[in-house]
Length: 381
Image 1 (cartoon, one colour):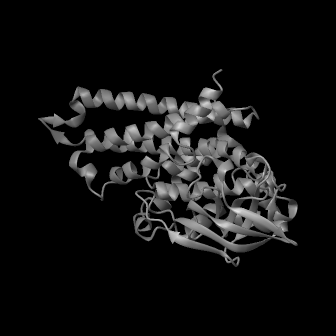
Image 2: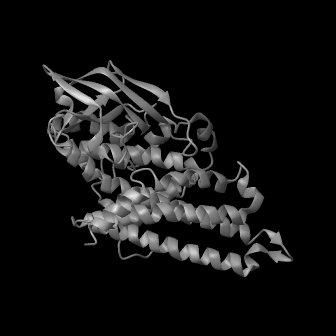
Image 3: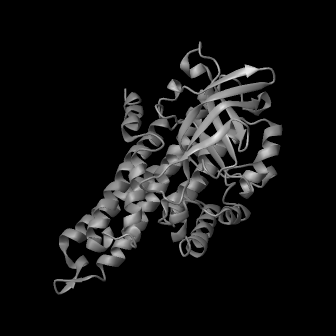
């Protein structure tokens, strides 16, 4: 693909990821929707190929690329047509493990990062609570210091990789007297830690091949050495990685939208109707052309935001635009693509039906459209 943003290394990465998904994911992923799980061997294969360490240090097996590499990964995962598979990987690579990479000390990096990059350990991030989403400062989970441990109490909701993950980066209030943004700490909590449990596996509308859980911390004792970064500074880590999370979700959305348009073009150019094929109808041709134009605009917005990030420039406004625009657009694309598939689009065996359900979360998860537009509006004055 010709682009001012990508070099030969980026092109090779895209080709490798697309080939892997076409050969190792799409032919076998249907059963994952039933089991609610991406097989660990698939993740480890991705680790062996370098897909899980695109941004990380070569010391631990990473490729030391920038945000454009993450965008390529997310876009190609979106094209798989299995949103649950895509988000399982992206939470691991770009939503959870960056907390360790950004703020972990040498001992923590040495302990966890090689297994994260190889896919031997699957990670998740636990910030959202039953009554707290994007309003991070309002979280209720508490961590109280007792000697050389902290005791965690509270619950976390909608945690991707929550059922089958091995390691979680958990946010908790450590200073209830400080300003809300100055009293949060992030802890590395391993599966099997006493007091830490999965209280419920959540049954979702879409993203069925990803596991999502409610997590409970009941007098969960975590060593003080498991703090990521500084005590009471976790809010800034969360805010910092929100940008990465929202950018890759935007890229995933545009990958999904692009794939949906390809599937729909294949359908409408072969489906016989009214003495020709559906694509002969001007209304269908023009609506698909309009959608293709909007998706291309969305992709360029994603690429530009990633380029700004790679240059070390402030891009909160642009990333918020990405999340708002792409999250809404992918749903618009899926609506029309399913419409043009007719009755077949409403049948569970069609890819477009699954993609329609999977896309709905994109305007909610990682920051709802309304929250994103507020972030944009703040930066317009």
